Length: 548
Image (cartoon, rainbow, N blue to C red; front, side, top):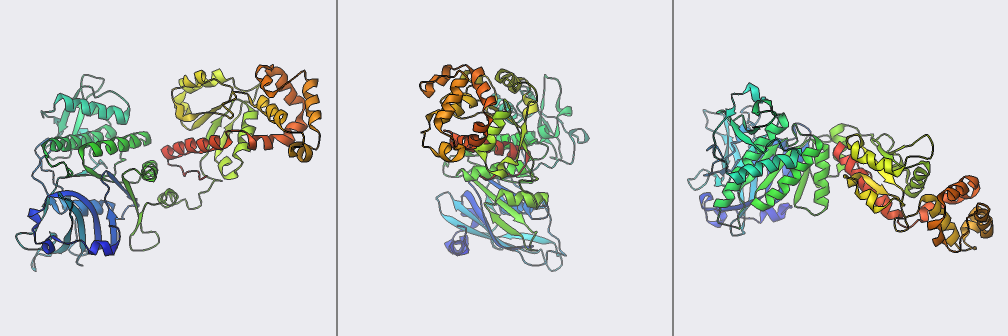
């Protein structure tokens, strides 16, 4: 329903001969803004799960949330008995001086029987004597007015710390199952178990609605901003979960939860964990979620999830090239990165690099030739070991497990002869790779010799590149006391002899190593996997992605 013609075909309640109060809302489908401040003729479709809106300050991100929730009332309450209704004025206010122009928009809903309905909404002064602007849903008759649909708005840009409010532990009934849910929620996001025992914390001004740990090393007065904000979200989740138990209409959704600046006070990994948790939760409890954010890592993750055909909608709001707000559906991350950072010159020459830790210099050379594309190589910082024969693989395995916190920006690459058993000992597999060809389990030097040994004597590597016969290559092996009947014999050949051959035959190595690297079995898979792992790190840190 993303084009104007299809929206115009949707009927209003008046055209259907029903009143707003007779409509049972199944879900919100989208918003069609005809005119509201500097947004004109724009449509945003709401996902059944999560919709993510990003943009600079002043691009109506919060206003959009207000427009979505304005036409709804609620008969339901949250944990503290407050109605699950969001007042437009709690999000922003209209000015009698600057908002005199009539604003109009439509909320597109689907009723509980699957019928699309268009709810017209507009602004007008309260009266001739009172210029204060109000928002009207439907019209002025007794049958018009707001529809019933539960809404909840959370602004996580916390301005009041827990100890400057009058929030105190408050007795509110939370079932054992709900307590376990809250504990699991905190563990999933922050990866710690401080909330195995907890209490509810609340103030009468509704500024604070959170949870505090008990029977641990700290209590509610010492919780972090991130924990405070997660507590507010957890309260809302439980409120909607209770509604799910009461809603007998399995077709209808149970409401919409809106989170303003969802990333506030959370580190990038926690932001991604929260998004993933909410995505699964939204499906189970049939609640639509609308969030806005400036977080580059979260925006990147949402775009990637949408590209995987997940039920995620992404929008970017921009005023950089026009006074009118541009609404970009399915935006490119590169565009968002440049506009939010104002780094319009970002390219592979100046973008942050990711550390690659290899066993030795030969592994670095092998990787560079396999990758071959300079825009990818320029995003890599190869960490070399200056002394001896490089870093032994068992040292790298220990490093991955004992110093993982120092390797957050690092990918460790092992040679192909390192066993599955050794690799499996590493806890974080996301930042570990093996060089090809894994199926042969040969070190690079042996793999190179196998490549030459298995090539025909009339192959261009001998006739054109090396310009020497294959028999000469065989002689160099014999001179090093490496005697092969077939290349399979390399498996049991002394590695020291092979390394010595490598050192003593620089002409063959230098002329043919590039071609070998590009011909190795598994090269394409390795490079693709490397880019994927690098982009995971890029996403966490908000770096621009690497394009293949």
